[in-house]
Image (cartoon, rainbow, N blue to C red; front, side, top):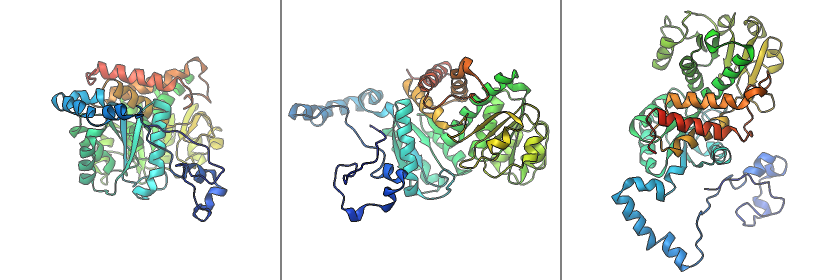
Length: 412
């Protein structure tokens, strides 16, 4: 699988080499470079072996291919050596939670899934195939992915709405012996933890000294809370639209009830704004707006990670008035919390050792490796490296592979 970003064409040829009639050209192409770049899609399939003559053909296809098929039938593990299986990931969505656009359906999700696939290739050297499913039922999605799984070395779940995404991931992990990873949850959590580790190091504090407040109890918020607890955060409270998730609330879903069982040791209740008083860390993954007065009430030297796109919960200009470190999900401000820093290397490491799953230890190792890339260049506007830093993917890949071996889930 080859994926490359191609400059928009200035002539009448489309990217597949066929001439297009002028009447068929989309008018948006003429003034919006995003449409021009996406015309014809962002991916193509490319052969890795030549088929130049009948000898090549007889080896790449029949009769030579039959020998390989028979060998795999006798020794199934050979599929990893003689097909692309161990080098390719399925990027699977149902189009129900795409970016900030919401439930826009499978066809409309494809540009994002193609984008995810080319990021896998660009940043991790991992081939990926976008798969948009025309179903939203949990049972149907699970069964479909299980049936597709023999073709892939891993499954990246993408843009599936909560709370279904939790059950889909759990059930696929139970039924498959390849890595299944919901990036909206765990990729965000890994990068957030890496940035927080460095922010804490910059301020001379340990994670155990910090109290964090997360805005958003969806996929990302739950995963971040779990990872922060695993990493040893002092305390973390999560707020949804109805306020802080606490054990005394009677309206909690099963996922939020579980969340309440291991967060909010201080027993906070009430609004997000009240929870922020004296807090060391704000992490926003919900959208909405946090009043400036609530940010001002945070502890001195606080960290504000406002990651909603395109509008952060706290604008950086406001956050910088009160916070020592500010991060967003946007590329036009310093300290971008971007999942592309995590998922390519995580899958590359898992595939490298043919891991049967991605463990909590592997995710923590990824966060530590990502944080370490910053090194001695640590500064308030540099607590997380750029996605274009060539050290990122190799560091994460090596750390994840080592952790997989240490935890006994590696098969080579």
